[in-house]
Length: 240
Picture 1 (cartoon, rainbow, N blue to C red):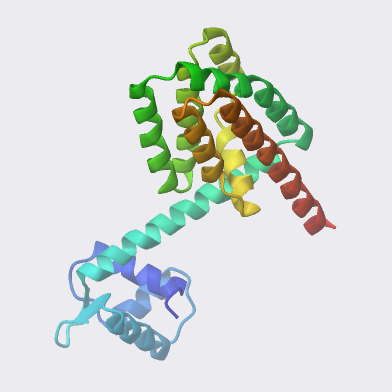
Picture 2 (picture 1 turned 180 degrees about the vertical axis):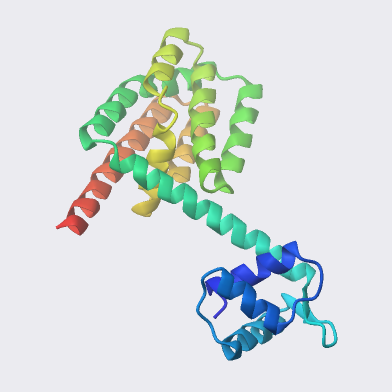
């Protein structure tokens, strides 16, 4: 019952109306919102909200929202935001062609393997610290934060490499702001984890091991290529 849309709607209503809300008003509120529920069902919903600690009774006047209920509203809002973000990315993926994404990744593989090698040679202690912060934030992020972390990681590597031409080439390839979110969405759908790839690259660069950094970057891009192909196979299979 805890995931019912009626509960989420009632909690939001209580959050916007500090006065106690009785079962009669709750029933009217749900009816106006298009929910088809009986008074008995509304009563069960309200009692469930009480048992979860989201609401509490104020005598016979009705119920008010508790601090725990307000936190739950925040969690619901976050979940809705993530769902909207996921739906938007799914639309963006559908607007792409498989060959376009693969061509982009092949070009990135050629450029970024050299970026990783040079970064391992030229990186400064300050740049290592910057990459470490990005890696930490990336690991604990989700949704659009992961997409931003991916962009930040590869940009920081390009800066550490110290080659303006390679950095400009990478910027040109990655100028599509939707590319990282799209690739992140694909990897999420096929249950792949990009963080492990980035961690391997970081470890090699921080250790100033050019061959290992180059190898880790190539493995990362090739993993992306495999993920894109796997996703397209899943989508094609579902459409048959």
